[in-house]
Amino acid sequence: MYPSRFINEQIYTNLILKSKQLEKRGQIKEALDQWNQKILDNLQDIRFYESKAAILMRNDQQEEIIKCWDFGIENNKTNILFYKAKINALQKLGRNIEIIECINKWIHLNNNCSLVENEISQISSYKFEFVNKCDEQDWIIKKKLLSLSSIREYIDYTNILKKLGKEEEILQCFDWGIMNNIDDIDFYYAKSMYLESQGKNQEAIDCWKFAIQKNYKSTQFYDSYSILLTKLNKIQELIDCMQFGIEQNPNQITFYDNKVNALIELGEQQQVINCLDYGISQNKYNINFYNYKCRILKRLERYEDCIECRELACELDNLDRLEEQLECWQRGIEIKKDCISFYQHKFNILWKLKRYEEALQLWDYGIQNNNQNEKFYYQKAEALEMLERNEEMLECWDQGIQINPNNVEFYKEKCYALMKFDKFEVVNKSWVSGQEDSNHSQNQLSDNEENSLKQSENAEKALKCWDLGLSNNPHILEFYNQKIQLLQRLGRIKEALTCREQGIQNNEDDPEFYMMLAEDLLSEKNIIESISSIDQGLKRCDDTRLYATKCQSLKKLKSLRKALIYFRLSDSGMYLGKKLKYHL
Image (cartoon, rainbow, N blue to C red):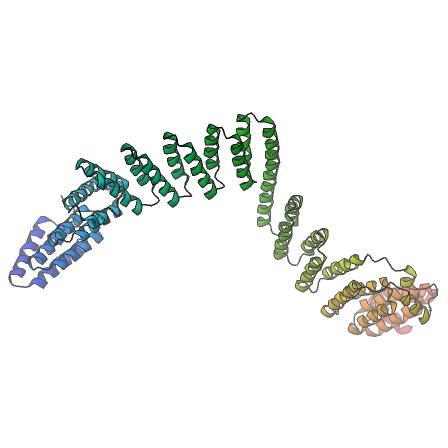
């Protein structure tokens, strides 16, 4: 019965009659066009393909017949009837190789389909019937026939050969199967079983040796081979096999276990220990190898060695826990890349394990994700300092300065590192603060500078660092302050004054710079000069802070009336301040 979607019998009969009439009138093309159209309209109905093929056969168009069935197969891959129809056409043409290819194609496309189990058996039987009709010397055809078959088909075929008494061809059949399925253990197993049944044990051994050479990473091949060797009581060959497995798979404990058991059977206790030690040397961080060695040592009643091994295992277990912690903190870092605490926890573990390069790489990753946060640079610099890698520490701060040219903290840290290299002591306070007399002479300043600490290369580098900062930030007071402090520390007082003046020249309308100069002069008890700098600032900008600073200077001179006036100017509103300033 055809499915309901197929055209009904009456219509099909009418089409047959019409086709015959066209054919009688010699209108072959029109007849074929009729069936071509019906095929396109009914791709799964084999009757239309058969009708077309019949016309082609009567008109001796053999190649077109094959093309017709190829089209049918392409649209009906699981329908065995289309394959059979093509095979029958090929048989009439004597094209045996193509018959084999057609059969293999069907098996290849349908071998995993549970709905066509009966068809597989049917076409397999058909295939074997065809093989047995072939010339026994025609091994090319037989080899082609079996090139894509499953192990089940090979076994079925060898059973047929056995019934026919063709024992020599059975091994050739298995060899074909192995060459076409080089990594399928079933083919080696089938050949080995057959050889064993024939008492050909050495050939069975050779079969497994070949299998392992081609599949040296697969444990199942070694297992099957070891079963055969154990059965044949070939212990030394088993040991050699497992040694080869160890060399190819040094991290697979199964190979060590099989070799150790064989060595114990031979009473080779020292070789057992050597094998266990080699396993640990190749798997230093795998606790399973330590535990395995402990079990074997206990079995050999070597209890002291067992205790030592157990202690190593405990140490490794602690290490494993640390590795878990590292993974945990790394997950935290990936979730929240700006949380320095996560980095710090992971860093502490890496440092404890003396994995210093990984620890530094961790801070590199932190800097990559937080390149504007000086804390990450600081942590890396601190680690480099502990490793006494000073040049790299400076490079770390250079990187920070390059990325953050306006952040004074990076310049500070680099200069601090440079000065720390030379272990500078703070310069005598009298050099920084000045003499009691507010009008100390230029000669005294010169004497102080001559007696200051000898300048080192690192001190010069620190000053150049602040010069770079000032060139990048000429309007930020903090950079001037930092350079001035360093110059004072080095006893270079005149240069410090020059730096102050440079700040005022670059920022004439910023009261902050006048206040900086005034407060520094006041701290050095240069009161008159302090007042002069304030007056200079008041000419450029009217700022209450300047009035307050002048008030402090006037108090130092005990000019209280004027100090009170400037106090009121600093403390009052702008309108009153301007009015008082006008009356003064």
